[in-house]
Amino acid sequence: MLEVKHLSTSFFTDDGEVKAVRDVTFDLFPGETLGIVGESGCGKSVTAMSVLGLVQRPGKIVGGQILFKDRDLTKLNSEELRQIRGRDIAMIFQDPLSSLNPVLRVGFQIDEAMFAHDKIAKEDVPERGVNLLKQVRVPDAQRRVKDYPHQFSGGMRQRAMIAMGLSNRPELLIADEPTTALDVTVQAQILELLRDLNQEMGTSIILITHNLGVVAGLCKRVVVMYAGEIVEEGPVEQIFESPQHPYTWSLLRSLPRVDEKRHERLKSIEGLPPDLIAPPPGCKFNPRCPFRIEKCFSEDPPLEMVGTAQQAKCWVTMKRAYAEMNAATITDTRPGAASGVRPPAELLQVVADLRTLEEPEVLETLAENPQLLEQMVSEEPAALEQLVADHPAVAEKLVTEETAAAVDGAAEDEKSE
Ligand SMILES: Nc1ncnc2c1ncn2[C@@H]1O[C@H](COP(=O)(O)OP(=O)(O)O)[C@@H](O)[C@H]1O
Ligand code: SF4
Ligand SMILES: [Mg+2]
Image (cartoon, rainbow, N blue to C red; front, side, top):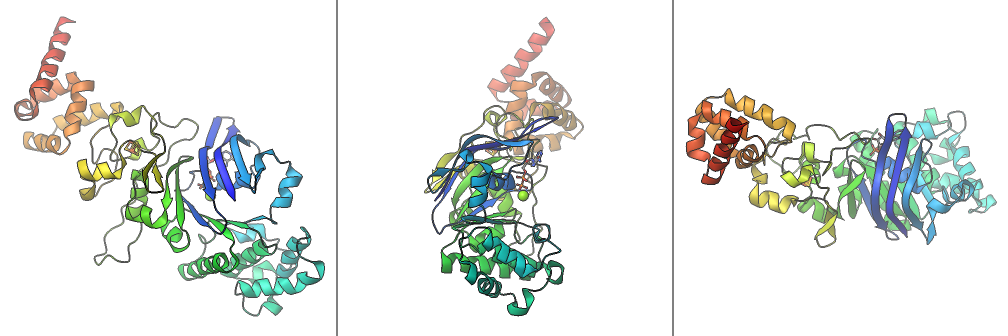
């Protein structure tokens, strides 16, 4: 029903091109519920706005197709898009106050949404308006259609927005953080409402949220976005059971778990998503990834099948991280915490820090981070040589024949220079 193919959307700012959405491909079947998740700023809303033709200058769709019922929405003019919006595809936003007109009665606004598209017979509109409010469980709907938005509570305003969104029986509802501003109880009620709509009326739903827990309550399938790209996609249960991208894995670890007896401190993901004007080379998650390998700094991994109907964009994937990198025991997800491969700039600092430690601690650190030694050998042999000068046991206990030869070689090179 909806096929987004290689969608790219950029904002052309004074500082440069912000590549907010890059090469995003996903589809949605009739009656399906799809979640799009990721931290703030990773391109979820821009993806939705692109589908609806709502990207404003300096933003622009720079590539790809958006096929909705066999029409490419990127090729339509603004009038054609306006026809589709609100009629075939409806959208609800996080903040209903900014979308409801404060000086017009709620019922009037819902009716207007129907009059605007001529899909509902005019004589049916007033009654349908009341019924819609009843359907989204606004109490005393008959009377409350005459209220102004400020007379509604936050949860009720969100319901009114949903009623308005549903007024023309859209086939697709896109809900962008519909529950973020609401308290937990109201949030659960709104999600339940969306679930009923999907089941009873067959409305397809795209739910956008930064909270994977919210996705679990409603969606069958999930797309995980990071820095404007899809990094993982698959059936919700499977992704929860066996995430393959380190970013998804980190998001899941930062969720509160109801099934855990001990109340563990949540492990939030350290660091921030990258600058979308100049993201790091290679995998964009590399500055924050505990499982990175050297390749991650220079080569961008493709999105590949990693299981039945599951795709991930990662050179390592969690299967390997569990098998080879002690993923199960990691409590610290800060860069460099696990595999120990560090970006070059950090490496010298790490070596300098090591030199200030006592020898047993140095040996322990190197034993815990075998790749650190390898990386020093290949990238900073001179620094490694200094470390060995301070702590001879490093050479004796940990340097293999091959690495020792490399250190000797580096020392020779330096002498001959
Ligand atoms: N009007 C704009 N001008 C410049 N950059 C923008 C604009 N709107 C969004 N962006 C950029 O697009 C990125 C993605 O934004 P958005 O899709 O809103 O993220 P989210 O995942 O939180 O919904 C942001 O990091 C932001 O830098
Ligand atoms: S292991 Fe490498 S490719 Fe995979 S997420 Fe980490 S940095 Fe990216
Ligand atoms: Mg957003």
